Image (cartoon, rainbow, N blue to C red; front, top):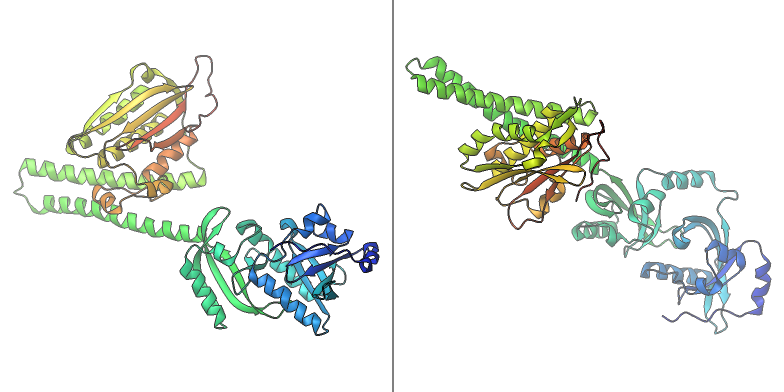
Length: 475
């Protein structure tokens, strides 16, 4: 719609002398057509022309509100209300007095006086407004078409300065459920995914019908509490129970079975006894690894993990970790190769046992997911001021949709396969945390056409320094 021509009415000149804001709104055009200097300041306008060019009705709900106000003042009603306006996104509570003003073409407009809402406020209303404004819960009101009428401080921080109800809900079914329930005059409580400045998060959303405080028209009150952290904690707990249930039960069953056979079968040959003892030993080792992983996760979460650092050549640590995995490589029919060259002698300030743990984890992970009769390559190279250790397999790689959770606790891209191969979903989380504790980085290279490649970088010690240089950045 073309903006209306600003008013040039001599009757208004006296209003320029007032020290409080007065403006005139054309409801049909949904624009301010005249404003005195205090009104320009209230609306944070750079000039009258800039203010007159703004639309006062970003949605049909607001436009309908303006038209309803016009009908009320046409009937002789003088409207007084406290309202929060948002000039250029700044929340500004004001006390408004709205009356009729006849335009030159005979149409009825609204003349509005606005005074900052701090003069003789209603204590109860003020307490409610302040509680809503600074509430730890996002509080918004909307028209039945979803247009936002008001929002408290937290809601503006989370959802932005301009949003509608439809902009919030990720699932359109959740939005339709809100609109249909409120239209029926009842409240609704549900968990829903909402779009925020931090991305999609999970909220406990309560919606209920309310009357618009200015027009009395039906509106929607929405309260939203961010429960993402709680849900993630619940999911982590469930995953922990699932992992512990499987990873403890399976090896315990194997150990118990092997010991039972040894106890009740005196006729077993030495070879059979050796196999049973080896089975029990392997599963006891698996149990110890699970317990150590869980203890490491707790120490990392509490910041209590101790590192016993000393200058160490990287090559021997990597080679020892690879040698520890050769039996697993042979059992999986996978060829395990190492390549270091001169880079193997690079000195790094590390806890050798912890770096051994990281390399062994990456190699073990690669062997589990490498197809039979393929290669897993472990290499050391010198990249800038850092030593880089890379482990590559030629398997299926990491699914794109899983990348964002790749280094999270209890994360497994294929839970069925992971359960078959064994694993807690803690390895990569612990490995990255250990490398970062050493001032390095651990990352996944997603550029390969096939397979997976993980690498970590650690600062190299210079010959004249006993402390590592600045930590590297991931590429």
